[in-house]
Length: 322
Image (tube, rainbow, N blue to C red):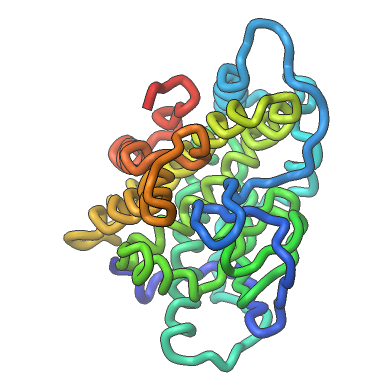
């Protein structure tokens, strides 16, 4: 990727060396073994599932359409957001200043370069999603990226590095231990900077879902769902975040960020973190009912779909068979 020399986000908080999370009550965001797996969108559950003849997927899609039409889906659907979307302070434009980090760590070398890399990728997502939201007459509230080491406490609970990167809708922040990228390359065989960028763009995709009301609706409805149905709906939520990551990729490709082989890096990463791939690798067999992120084929498909279309309307995972 041609990322060097581009604008870095000012929404990066570096607490490496001072985090220390201890326990692990929070699932990971991309779906990796080593901790609990569940989506990185865990939030306090409450309320009842909507009645009538509409299923959860239908209501979520209705919410997306209402949002695009300029109507607050949380208002029309009875405030399904719970505590997820509250407290957002929308910004009026992307941050165009130099990055303002909370502290400077003594890690040096590769870690400092990775810090610059994720700040640059986050800055790009801010620009892309600000423009997309603007096209619908909306303002994009930028998330904060928290860099931690070993463990961290978020509004969603405690998490260790084993959880992988995750998004917490309770505080609208993305969390990542940069050592995860070594695991992605060495353990999962998915090296490359665009593969790394895809991971971050996926978590930002969850932030977009949170803003437009999809995560709040899912949170409300899952209260009365059986576990199998929750898993199936979680897959659709995760695949949509993959598609949103692809939408971001579409725009950076048009802006000249990508080099030959970059798209393949992201598709390899999507393949290597599919539920079926990970289950085969870790336990030797596949249990489809336990999927909660999507198969390798599904993750590749939806990232590519967003990448090729560049439109959030193409990311309707809830009414698709794949």
